[in-house]
Image (cartoon, each protein chain N blue to C red):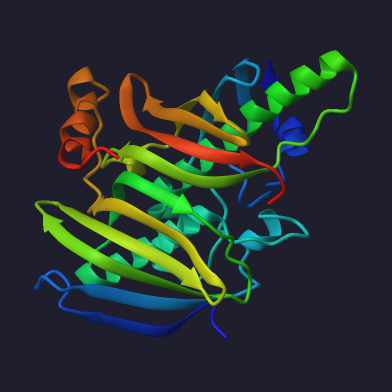
Length: 153
Length: 150
């Protein structure tokens, strides 16, 4: 199932200039998805701090992108479950709680486009633990784990 | 008022001594463009931007841009809101070859907002090849080997 930006905006509260999950292929609802992201082609979202300039923040935006794709995947699971029951799907609002065991390659900045694969690894009450890998071609650029909590921001 | 206003900055014995601390505060301006999209009608500073400001702090200290190379552990405990003053304190900072390993915490007046154990390094030069050999660079750079399990 492909989530276009229009559909993503029905399940995520994020909007430009801080929405990076622009198209997500949900491979297995609620569990697995893939997105292509362009971390160097973003609008200016923060002024006055060199470390947050778009050309210097690919690492940070990669982490945010992984969280957003994870949010879409989780929302797709909620949609699938509730659609089967005939109820209105809940939105995909979630809180980012953290990251663990992440590695990011040194030349991430040089990549115009990369593929982001995100998977659900476990559910602990209202907390969802997932993992991501970022690749370009056959090159592994980043990997890590993330934790979000379903609920209002 | 600037987009980001530094209110305090302190550092002592960082990198050169065993006792180290590095601290800086920012006023979070409600006019920052990010707040139009995160989130409309409910502005919250994205947690990952705390990491961006942490990078800025380290970059200023070492005099060159740095990139996150590894995150052993990163927790976001409380949202940072427009008009908050965000303070980041690096409590432990160690050089290890090209890497800088650090532990930090971030807080606003209401309490802690984030903390983590992170490694940063200077971004490497542009590489053109897509070879599998180069894909091993992530393995070679991995900080997993040098960090404790938790």
